[in-house]
Length: 404
Ligand SMILES: C[S@@+](CC[C@H](N)C(=O)[O-])C[C@H]1O[C@@H](n2cnc3c(N)ncnc32)[C@H](O)[C@@H]1O
Figure 1 (cartoon, rainbow, N blue to C red):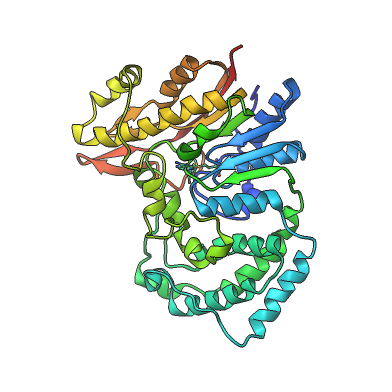
Figure 2 (cartoon, rainbow, N blue to C red):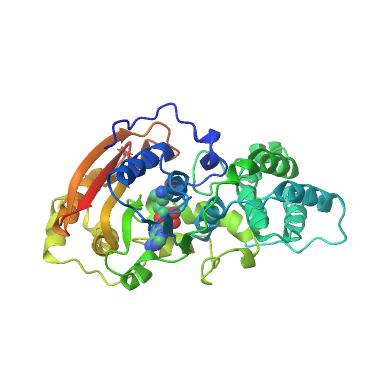
């Protein structure tokens, strides 16, 4: 299983996964090839991705087997929207609906109010006006599938016309000269990209369910052996200091009307709320048992005490999650993982996870390591004690099978 892991020539720009940006996405053909091998060897009727992000694995699953049941969960409403659109696709009248948006852009009586906290920091005034007009035009589209597709396409338009730098997933303001030089391409970018890409959204599933939730809040309600295959890439550490999926999403989430998002109600409270509520971010009671403490001991001993709490908090969530995943998965668990560094100490998430999976009844089929060719998270991250810190440069793919 997994003979080719490089996929150096794969360009996601050529397929559905290149149609919108989301941080830390998996490499689609790798996931597809793993799923394809598993499906050839075993009967698979259901696939689960508990941290589906932009829906890479779930979409690849329905490409391989259109009638397969796919289920996913993500705490981020933008991830939910992106994945929903990939799975439900567009309606056949989409081309007519793009023309309708263009018509409404040129013929309007009113523009719906559009504002959010700190809007002027992140969007120039003329960009706000263009987005308000475009947003009003999209809101007039009746077809639910196509309207959601248009919000999906708006995600990149906002990002590329905003005052945030493209070099990082964080919201990080450009210098004022660069802001002045932004060409307002809101309308053009939207119409061009919608027309260029809609035909990638005709492959769809009628057999999917997405949960817009904290996986830790819902996983205990899932039955034992519910899904044949669980395939995912979990966060490697708390979002705030690893990958800020929430912050990345906020400009889009503040622009898309709430009625077209799956919201529990707290997500838009502030720019950090989603990241703070994500894995390892919440202030839960810390509870590691003796075995778990031993797994972390060698790392904690080398890391400053002030950082222990955040590491233990992450692993409290992580172990809870992996234990439950082992319970609800009937056949295979496939994880794409990276190691992270705290205080220049590499925490070997891969080896910790392997031990844990074994303890909870899974045996290793394959472990593969892959250099990450292009990364938006810089190779060297922040300075600790004046020395630069290496961030993750490799990812690992673990394939495990439930022992009889
Ligand atoms: C590495 S990304 C997944 C990327 C995905 N595999 C893809 O290809 O796009 C991890 C995801 O976990 C989500 N996440 C973090 N904490 C979560 C939690 N407690 N419950 C559900 N989702 C969570 C983040 O919002 C993010 O989308």
